[in-house]
Image 1 (cartoon, rainbow, N blue to C red):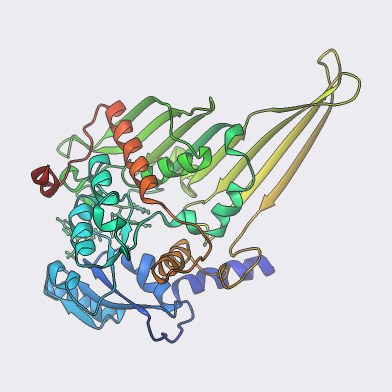
Image 2 (cartoon, helix red, strand yellow; image 1 turned 90 degrees about the vertical axis):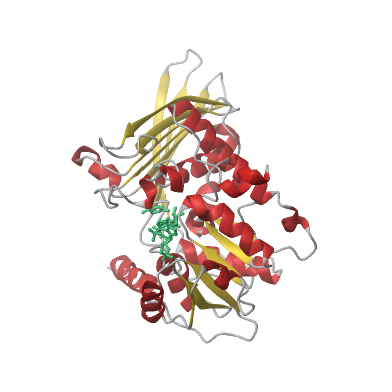
Length: 413
Ligand SMILES: NC(=O)C1=CN([C@@H]2O[C@H](COP(=O)(O)OP(=O)(O)OC[C@H]3O[C@@H](n4cnc5c(N)ncnc54)[C@H](OP(=O)(O)O)[C@@H]3O)[C@@H](O)[C@H]2O)C=CC1
Ligand SMILES: O=C1OC[C@@H](O)[C@H](O)[C@H]1O
């Protein structure tokens, strides 16, 4: 009963968190575009953060910009993205533009001296990623902070999950990121090649990021990849559904799948993006030539949105074999792990059960800007480059072109 109450309370507070007064020196954020994701990823999380003020928004259509600002209580509306970026009262830019516009507007914001919280996937391809994350602006003294917003990785549930196994002993990973219904129309930015769309760039980017995180390594081989194209008449360079398999340097493998059009047959899987980690069998010699073989499997339900609900199920089967290799005993154990906030809270490790992945991410971003240690969780620029390199390699295996490089970078080259 208590856990049902906790579920409702947490999910209510996720969307209506307690609002706190802002401190002197709070960071003033500006949003590029009246984006659908911004309320979830920034505007709501900012309500419970004393050091974040959502101060401005810019949208291409002033009517839309004003309506958005009014709805979300944003005091300043700029006519253009450039005006927002050059507003001296703004400290940080949140960039939730379509993927294909991430590079150009992030570079502009960094040049204007703003810190940037950049939606995932960071940019269109590895060429842009190298140019952005290795930009000289980022290695200067007092360089602005730049973060690719892989929000799930900041949540305590993901950090707990990573402590449950040793990366080098992982044998196989399976990640399924499905949507139960066709939520996005076929003309959505997600399915537009010139805006660097594609399911691998969308849901698939979480799958790619999570397997890289689990192995703490880059795949040696993209073993196979396949995709379901868009219906006739739509962009032929877009993967509406995608599957890929990888092999990692420790010999382990991974299968990822992401789809924007899920059939009823996969609805059960679709209800919560699922992740399964199988560990290599672990042999331990015990007395009189006998040995124990431990087989461990970890199943993480809803790793992308753990704030709503999640379950990390650790199953261990231990077989005892005699000297002839005959199984003489089998033991099973099951343990469910969950973490909505840090096990031990402190000044550095702040969090509440209702904090979303985005709220933990915002905490880390502000800590970084303020030069504080915080939880230590971060997505490093080199990591973001490797992420885009693997996305490019996967598109190559799919027989599709990498997402297009911005003209501004092509011209500079
Ligand atoms: N972290 C997360 O959980 C999620 C992240 N995302 C990421 O956020 C980004 C935006 O996604 P989402 O909010 O769903 O997108 P939207 O469809 O809401 O588009 C975002 C904004 O892009 C602007 N835009 C600029 N140029 C164009 C153009 N040529 N065509 C269409 N829109 C344009 C629009 O701004 P204007 O208002 O000025 O017209 C729009 O408000 C993507 O990178 C996506 O991957 C998306 C969903 C979830
Ligand atoms: O980042 C994302 O997460 C949620 C999905 O609905 C969305 O397509 C994707 O961009």
